[in-house]
Length: 121
Image (cartoon, rainbow, N blue to C red; front, side, top):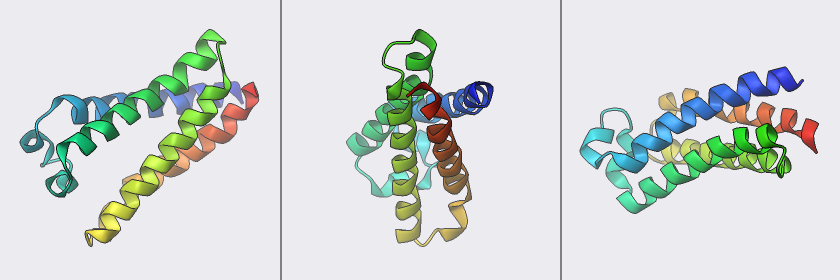
């Protein structure tokens, strides 16, 4: 189970470092081609989501790796589930139901990671 956690958690962490990092450092115009929803959100909210994604990625890796507060990995995975719930709601409100596939996949991956993180509890 630990190997499964490291594989799935590592892949999620890589994704969220990339996606969160883009939200933190790029301008709205640069984000629009990949993330059309940013046109209706205030940039401080987009940046906050990016920071939360980066913190979630760190939370998946650092606590189990260092052995310091390993239950934070579970909290990080649950936080990433909640971010995806917000993403699904945003897309549905915008009439973009066809775009929620990635959100659903990330939600499921984060939920499985949360379950696997219980190894350290």
